[in-house]
Image 1 (spheres, helix red, strand yellow):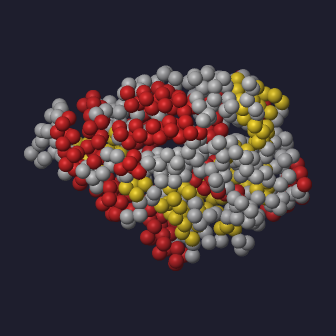
Image 2 (cartoon, one colour; image 1 turned 60 degrees about the vertical axis):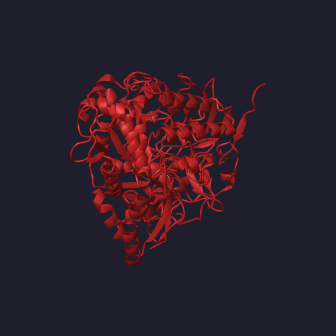
Length: 640
């Protein structure tokens, strides 16, 4: 029997189990209002009238449920980034997506006008007629065709094939362009990760501005003109040029059209980037005023160590990145002097600080130890988490594993503490059992090849609380004969060392989203991504379809991979919850990561004149896109 097709009208919610939420008022009945700053350009003819810039049916943002109140247009805000490439966070904060999460973590059409879903196998996307890129060019199904035919399936631009999120049982979708505003993606089996990938903090892009990028593509451009462009850019060939000019996420090409609420107008390198409002943005508020409210956003680049001081001086209007829990006392005192608001949001991490043994370590001796569960258990049992929580987080966190949060339907109190209680006697016994009983004169155990057990933990050095926690753990591990050293390097170098196996252990956040639900894709629970620090080469093998990396070769990892596939191949919510729970059981039992404390608060500095940002919020990368979940296009400032 043919399964029924679900029809999702504009603003219909896709709340995990695909439940509808309220529909916005009909935009066609509205009179639209230009932002004040654009009105002169409309009068002069520099810009078309607003009804020619908006889609036929723009997305209407209402304020009675998910948002606070309609605002006024105008003004600008500033926030600080640690490095120039972090301007890409504007794409995260802007959070214009084909489908996106609302504050209830329900998925709803955004750039799309509506969406049909059949059995999680067939997805029919309906675009908004009249939608335009930021340069005024039409945004149509041809932008999807161009990406699919000329980017995703082009062996020069995509040598490893289409993105993994588009593969089901190793096969890509059948992509059909039905008309100018309708595109269909069809698989023979369910692809429950498709919509979450589109809604991600770093989204899966399945479209690209064909009208702009064609000039850099060998299939479209005049060969001589393209060769001249390559030579002028300094890139090695047209492929490198296309990739450099066509990255919608990085936001560093000022000529690249976008669908985000603000457009970068400052080419790098720079210490200050200016993002101006997108005059063709597809959202309006319930009064008909085009969003965003803010005319521009300034992104200043400062040294990471200076961000708390600059925020405390009132120089940032909206700041969370670069701030940690350790900055709260200073920021609380500064907020009284400088008159800004300090909010404390809940983080969604499975652990604020987690240590990752590298199962793919290059050193054969350390590799064998990291793969011995007893060794990982011993290291975990030797950590005094209660003391760490008290010293580093003022006792406000919850000690335990890197696992589901208490608000998740798969939370289990036993799993939180399994192998995570403070038991140095048991830790010593496990190390002796492994055969690591020989010690040097300094009391440090010896590796099987006679070297002192000097365990280097690699860190990006971006968070002082990581260093503080490692200093405490150093004392704990020294008590069981393990000598901990900390090696700090820039994030790119840090990740490269993990990926290549030079790092035998690293420290980072725990699970990005530990609020696991029935439709939370368990990507973080299986070795399917190179970025998972405990088994990067296994993830690389999956992501490259075996072209790089190495296949998972430990029983627990093979079981995780099978469970991951089982999750993808069922649509039963209860079965999915059971599978996720089993995967979390494996992680706790195997100590695939060593969690410390969860439930730590994230400080958020907010200009007291900035509205529509909640005082109580969730600070989550994915899902949530940090501020993106709260739609910064609706933030507004008191008129000055």
